[in-house]
Length: 319
Image (tube, rainbow, N blue to C red; front, side, top):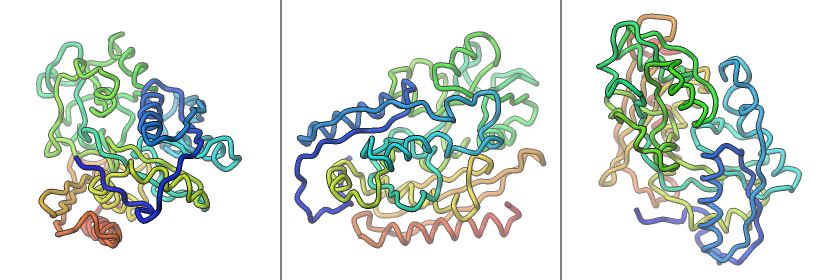
């Protein structure tokens, strides 16, 4: 897909020295190294600042009970604020819907596969599981989607980085687990995938598969350096998805899915909500709108579409 610059496209990019703040998990480091290589290809000098976040340290409780996905980005933001780093690379699905004052999402890069993947040592597909089988996930979104597909399953918490989750599966703690396909593909572990769920089976999380780069709002030079890495179509899609989540008060404690496609100038946005403690049924909503990804006003329209879909969900009982 052609990269389309959407940040400061009228300015001339000059070489700068940059430090990337990143978590130290294998996947996070891959993502940071990927951005580092692209920036170096633009003539910039780039180093990494590896950090361990609260989200990486607290593994015995679900994120919804200890502060949400913001725990994965807070320390990185402190490094930006203190000047120890100039940008932070995030899996966009881990980034809170509203950033703190003084911080901007300066770049969204071309998306990897946004879908969920079924991983199991024994069963090739979710449908192959026996009644009452144990499936691992700590995502409330995946929990309600799995319950809608297989109400009989026993869904158990699964925390930790990608390697930790796979180790727990290999130790026999679960009959299967659900992971983001993007992470497995980025680390060359696609062979572990037994089945990729189509979005009609399991709708992805807002921003899943996309990388977002956060900077201080006053660092226009850093935003300018990042402009060639941005992908307008991906940014448009995730803007709509994140708008659904923001309008619903979305966080990791929200059992909400939102996914947008942009094909032939048409943005199609879908969302689903379920009650993890109620009946295994989903509330669904969708909207389609013609949009030009290169139009500066398109992301504002995408925001409005996300709010409209959230209103549809609420009208059907989502909360």
